[in-house]
Image (cartoon, rainbow, N blue to C red; front, side):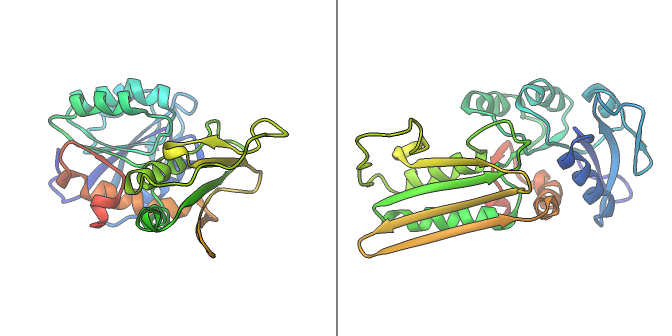
Length: 261
């Protein structure tokens, strides 16, 4: 799929009744070169968003002939809708948490005539944070990750935290063992991720999405932190992905490639 004759990219939004989905609809409406072609959410069917009538499902959304569909729903819903988009030859930009390796393999098999970008985080600052942590990993002996999200997030740890640990583990296999031999309170050391990097998940009212990576070696520590104060921080990355997805064949993980990192 490409752009319309008028040169505009037609964008559909799944999960538009959610906070992220509505923010995406607003960003698309305001972005130069994009047009909100359709929106879907079973809980908001029949309402309007920027003059577009919300439909109940992905089949109704496809009737609006989008070039790209943005999906910020939940993993269960994405597993059902993304293959439908792939079969229709529509590009997909996905911010859904909880998609695993098996899901990604399924998407790679499905997206052969259109493209798919799956990113654990669309905040460009967060993408840079993960890259900086990856670069720092070989120079430190210990590392832990603390991620903080709003109290409406149902999964833990976050996809960003897991992706950060995976990239750090791939960058260095030499980490000091955890000295803890007894947890006075079970779970006090958090979850254990790739390369035994510990991940701590906080769920707080008033928070949006924050993450801190702390690395330590002899005589020094390095802290890399990214804070999100508003969901608007994710929108430049979403718009970037929508604009560049046609040039990213197959399934692309993360914004790094689109940013040239």
